[in-house]
Image (cartoon, rainbow, N blue to C red):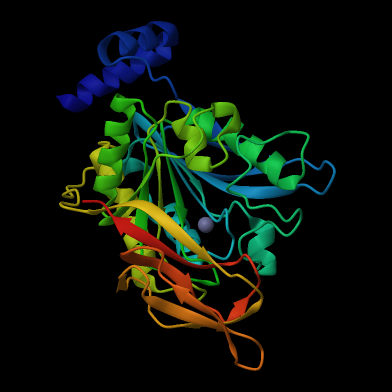
Length: 359
Ligand SMILES: [Zn+2]
């Protein structure tokens, strides 16, 4: 009986498309996005499409940023997940790769926009922290500038083609080549209480149990600086999460990030997935960074995640003859969120980042 009814419906669509569409609208609501396009990737409902965001040439060269659009079988929220702004934070890049491979449109209500590698030049040249084309961090120049250098232009394209089209954004990072980092998320407090409650619930759903409270991000959407903040200042509850560290990839870090995104999708009802939000997370505020006073060789005295007292030694810096030139003390009591993973040290480099636990 159900088959017969369906056949009759198909026949009606064939005979009178306009009327059928009207009937569908009246009974189920219009599909606002029968197709979804990001850059050169266009997916019809229930499809996955691969393509690129074209960063045009300007004062320096252009390049292509890979993008995947997973347009779920049913309408729902649009979630963007980005990684590789720092192209040697590998666990986060592999996590988004895995999401591209494993996400099935048939299982999804809503749309996933997946950017596995924003900073292709950094990945290709194994350059930490910056885009080697213009020596700029690719998470500091949002919302971007169509007439700037390559990083500015890439940021402009991502703002226009990804941030403007999504409802929520998750920016994935991790310890870069020189950062021995423990996993954590950031919760940005915008001051808009309703939005902040939504983003707080997203961060708790993601599941990392260390959460940095970030109140000092710019409030002006025209000077948003960070990718997550570009979405947040445009009224889209979003957050950043970090896992992985210093080069070689630990599969557990990739899995934590993949599961975090799936948990958020469950929370947003984009997926049928039950995952309890993290209970009693460790809230961290503020985060204090310790910088190198001069060039030298860094010798850590503690590991990532160490609990340290104010003034406790976390390492020493020597000259190239192994003579001590700096005692590195923790600036406050807290958790070592990351510590320098490599001996190489230049004046001004970050040696460690210590998070103070909120009481
Ligand atoms: Zn990063």
